[in-house]
Amino acid sequence: MHQSSPVGAIPLALIEKLPKTDLHVHLDGSLRLSTILELAQRHRIELPAKDPEGLRAAMHLGQNCGSLVEYLKAFDVTLRVMQTEESLRRIAFELAEDAARENVRYMEVRYAPMLHTRLGLKLTTVVESVLAGLRQAQEQHGIESNVIICGIRNVSPEHSLEMAELAVAYKGRGVVGFDLAGAEYDHPAKHHRAAFQLVRDNNINVTIHAGEAYGPESVAQAIHVCGAHRIGHGCRLRENGDLLHYVNDHRIPLECCPSSNVQTGAIRDLESHPLKLYKNLGVRVTVNTDNRLVTDTTVSRELWLCHTQMGMTLEDIKQIILSGFKSAFLPFHVKQQYLRKVSEELAAFSEVEPEGLLAEGVTGKRLHAGDA
Image (tube, rainbow, N blue to C red; front, side, top):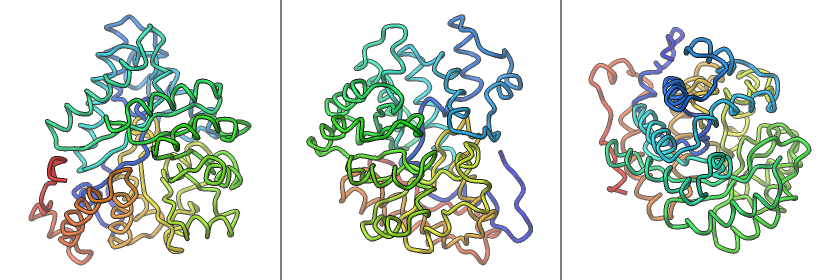
């Protein structure tokens, strides 16, 4: 994962030292390859390959898939090994541990509990297993993580309502939001209106995948029909200038996942990604992994690609990082504390002498979740 930097570019190693968020990361797309193989062997689960290289090829990890539907096929593999309490706890812990290694301070992990009940696990057990893994990582590594529960577009609205009820039950107990994920085309969010009404009646945050595999009208529907507070992806928002300015004026954050958008065919290449346009207009953009395994990436790498492929400066990257903390589904005063500490740390990094900072090992003060 450690690519060499182009001449004159900020090294990836420096970006890894910056404090960060990951607000759009799917649990079932962010496993360690070694863990999939180990769990499959232990539980006698059949996989398309029995070695890391073969599995990487079979799941098209980090490769362009051409469409979101093709991209989602990798999840058929990961979900096979995510059907027990032990595996869910371990996978959640390892995700947070991996994020902590690149100095992600706050993370919101999303998944659909209904996809983890093939062996009879109760929905409540699924939620509690994941929360236990995230809490263990917080104790050991100081990374704060919360959960966003997903409904699935291409599954029935009744199932989405059941997921919404779960989000209501765990509000204030580690669940901070509700999302609608899955195949976007031909599965409009408005069909799941009852689920969104329930979570909003309970003052729960809403984020919705929109404007990725379908046009800006899906973003309009997410905001105006379903009451989204954040938008997942939103790369096609640039096709409607009026809506783009509405999103900007109302400070609705975009959870951008650049490499994933290229992989699914939503965007031709990183150079043509609208993220820079959005940021220059003043839109609150955040940069996220989407799926650490399936997209073969980290938050640091995504930010580094914004620099090397889109021409963003270190100052641009710092602003995007701050937007991540501003956009978190956290209480206002907690966000303020994060922002004060992170702003101080970011001020220690300068564009002029990145190599000197790396040599000195400047990392700023480590913020443990208990401090916020």
